[in-house]
Image 1 (cartoon, rainbow, N blue to C red):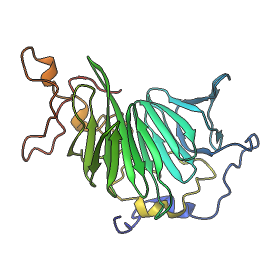
Image 2: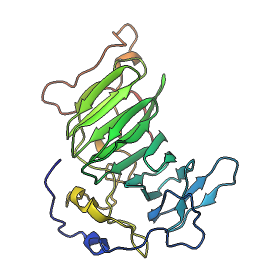
Image 3: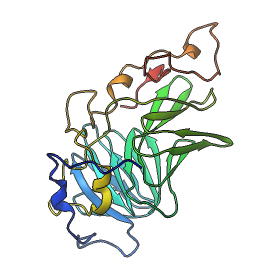
Length: 270
C-alpha cells in the first residue's frame, strides 16, 4: 500500500477525533453505517418499506438500496468502508462489508491493513477489497451494461465467474458481456473527495487519512470528480461490436502509449 500522503489543504484532519457514529436519534440496533457527506437528494429503501430521504448522520441498514438524484452525491461510512456514491447512481448495501453497484459510480476507500476482504460488486464482476482505494462504474451500451473497476492504492483482485484479473494502482479491470475481462490503464481523475459536503458533526474517518491525497479535488465541470464520469469516458469511443463485419467478442487492449481504456460504445452511466 502506498505511503501516507500529507493532507495539504484538506480540513478532514480535524475530523480524526473520536466522533461517535450514529449520532442521530432514530438509528436502529441493526444499522451498519451512516451518512457522512451529503449534497442534493439521496434516498434509501429497505425491502418491503417506503423510501426514506437521507439526511446527515442517518443510519444505513443491511439491504438498503441507496439512490442518488442527478447532481446529487452521498458519502456513507459502512463498517470500515467509506463509500462515495456519485450522481444518478444505485448502490445496494448488502452488509457492513459487502456493497453492490447496479447503476452509476461509487468510490470505496478501505483503510485497513489486515483482516478479511470486503466485497465490491459491479454488475456481475466482484472485487476483493482490503486496504484499497477503488472505483466502480456501470456503463451502458447496445448489448446491456458492463462494469469497470479501477484501483488507486493497492492491487485489486477482480473476478467474474471463473475469470480473474488483478488491477495494479492506476489500472482498471473491464468486464463487458461479450468479451473476456481485461486490464487497461486508468483515467487520471478520482471520483469524489472525502472533504466535500461534510455533515455538521463530521464522519468518523480514523485511518482513512492514509488514503487521501491533495489530488482529490472539489466538484467541478463535467469530467471532474462527482460530475458523473471521468473525462476520458464522457464520450466513449465506439466498440468494434458496433461496426458491421468487424471482429467482436475478443479482449481489447489499449493502443500502445495512449493510456486510454478502449471500448465504451454506448451511453455513459450518467
